[in-house]
Image 1 (cartoon, rainbow, N blue to C red):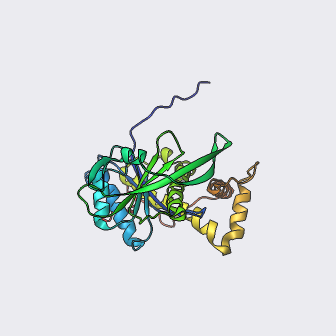
Image 2: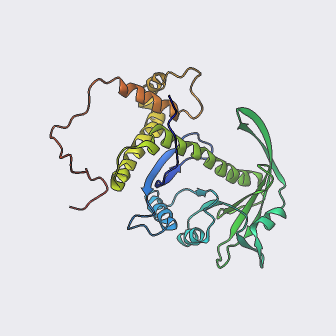
Image 3: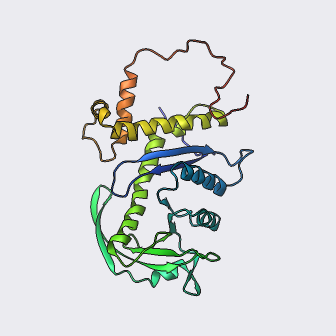
Length: 299
């Protein structure tokens, strides 16, 4: 028996927006969008991101801070976000120019000369082992070239050889509590990566068998609904705590429930649904040649 060969193929882009709280351990999936750069209505990646941010901002009435990783520091995203008045915390790669005082300086040079008088120690799990990191942080007031909005560059040393640079619209001052809150906000974004990994793995998004682009897009709201049910409804509502307990038990984990327990909930739901011997049947037979339209509103 020979193992099947695996190879990479061209796929689609996924755009996920997930809400969380700095000191919370839960998540609220807000949108899960699939798009193709070859689609006739596609304009650019920046436009996809900005349109989705606008949609979510309108729905949540402008609440919250947009936390974006490296890649979000491009001018075509930063300027529109500033124009919309969005609050954000974006990690810079270092080659972005900022204005400090009256001088235009590389962000990496500002970070190297930035005073970091505050310290906080954290424990990071690396390869299954605990490692204590001592983080030093501070900030410098800056502006974006061509813009008048006051910004701050939050600098954190201790994660690696180079300092981490976070550009934010949040008003900062020389307060350990204020600055550490923003550092925590960015670290929560790392937890979101696990949430996105959970969505892709638990619902096998990279192994779906529908063939059409519109069919793939139609699956995303269903995945979002299933994720919301597992992450919010089962995890939060008091009336369903007992049900969540049974679901977790059905996962049959041998070594307990991990901290990120959404995997266990997904496994438990799978176990429960697989016990049903019946199958879903429609009262009225469907035309096999006609794709059900969820996102296509054309007659």
